[in-house]
Length: 321
Image (cartoon, rainbow, N blue to C red):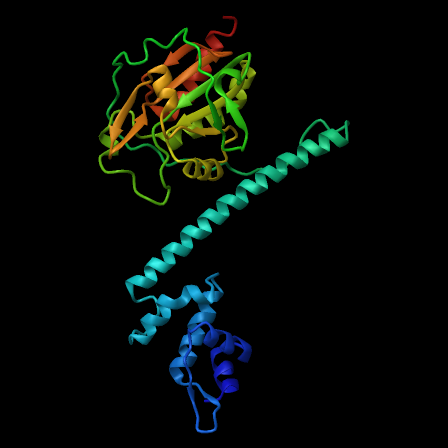
């Protein structure tokens, strides 16, 4: 069939057919008069490119689906390569959504700051419609309880070193200059990929499971902690910065997370760590600090989903200390 007929049958334009051919996705034959001669298979391939394009796949990303159709399958996603292409696109979209969410939150922050700066009568940020904050999945029952092995007993009274990290909010943070007042630094082992299963045997390691739940706890208790005089809350782990950023975006965490993949702070303070799946990670631990001095240590931390409540209550009990 001629280009006009093929384009109409596939629901695309003639220009689109030409583009698909230029990309090497369609290979129409030639009639005796030199005109392109499109087959029913060409039409089916063009339909597949169009339908996948409506879902955000570029023409070049449709290659596995077209190969599947050419192999004789009725559906372009019948082949394992097509499933892999789906997953790759999903991961790319997840990353885009996380970046857009981060940009949105930053724009809101800047808008509110600019409004307060430019209009002194405005004392409150613009209000957004009420919405439920996302929650982490409940912890499974029967998790093993960690025991105090004394690995943090040396920490009270120690000073934080002058180590600097970049927070998920983009700010540079030097630990010994975070605040002159009271603040909280909690350590956790692993954020990981939210689309992947937890590492094998993770639930069997005492105190390992519960990072998202603990992070949500500090998010939900942040106002209460501030009311008790806590200047800042920071989180730190050896986890990758992009995983931390994804967690901040997904759970709307209002405090920065710091990535320490080389465990430089663990080396400086002799902090407790553990080995799992070929990695060295921080044990779950929380420091209460006054300036750069460690005032109190929570270790071991269990259960992690109610730990922020425990920390908040500690500040209530030590308000005048």
